[in-house]
Length: 217
Length: 233
Image 1 (spheres, rainbow over the protein chains, first blue to last red):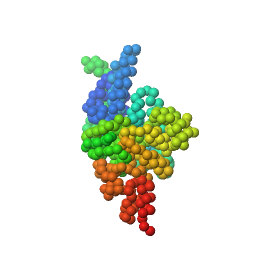
Image 2: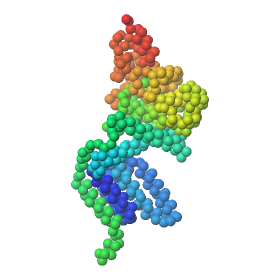
Image 3: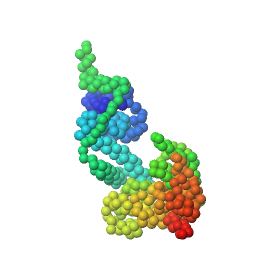
Image 4: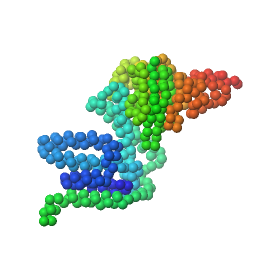
């Protein structure tokens, strides 16, 4: 989807649909299979497998001790997949454009800028994490739980330093609040079809299929 | 005899690529290149920390190797400066006294300034002998005085292969061979002083001295001073 507004709304509605019912989750998964570059997402974000594994673990615990684990697994996995899709498809500047479109040049600009910085820092943190793992390998350390504390400290420290640097740069350039931006959005026909299908997913989540058939009879 | 051979090694990423071939023998090697030319990637590949998309790297008689990353905080695994020294297998008191950080033994390494942390990190790395020592931007975050000390420390190394990946152009140690990454390719410029004529980004001071008819023998400050003294008038 080229238009970030459509992508954000699609992701929000698909996540809600997946969360409220199993039919919604199934329909959202079908939508994800049809309208997203599935393999590219998995390749670009290796984290997707770890997250699904973690959800599987908690689902198993839930299934064993209280029931409903399978439903939880299906719904949460679809939400993670939708989240990964929106994250992998995101391009620099899109949150800023969408936020300005939604809330205007003042509050919208500030919120959009914060979101952009957040996304940027996520990729910096991921790059740092890769290097930390290499550095631990150099020292002959295994990637284990007790090494997570210093690694976490380094990551937080790095993020704070970067945030401080950016704040100083903004202050030096005279930034106080708000800004001017004329966002432009492009929608292609397939995106329109995908957007309409999102509505279908939401409807399928809200109206249980069994009741539909009872009414039909 | 230790040596590391790069056989048509290459790396590709988005709109960037790097290809490297050549043999690094015992001694101190300088790999020079612009920021973003691929020095760090090459260092990581030579250390065996990045998979090779193509080509191969052969290491002969290299039993121990070490890579110093550009940003010293990424190496931190100790919760105190003393613990950090211990994690490198060195005695804290000895190392900290040598770099003037004895009073900061119990604080977090992340509370040190970038320059102090770099000094601590390099002191720990250089405290041991390795067959292959890869230093990625070792001069960054150091002031002139510390750069000179580091050059002297590197100059004391009498065995193994030391490869310095840097874009530093002013304060450098005496080296055995000069390499340069130009147009996405690692180029062997040769041994100094003959290497200067093939070195595209030759430091301006060396270029000026050569133009004045007093080519330095090597790239260290002592060599540059000696060449300057040779200029008549």
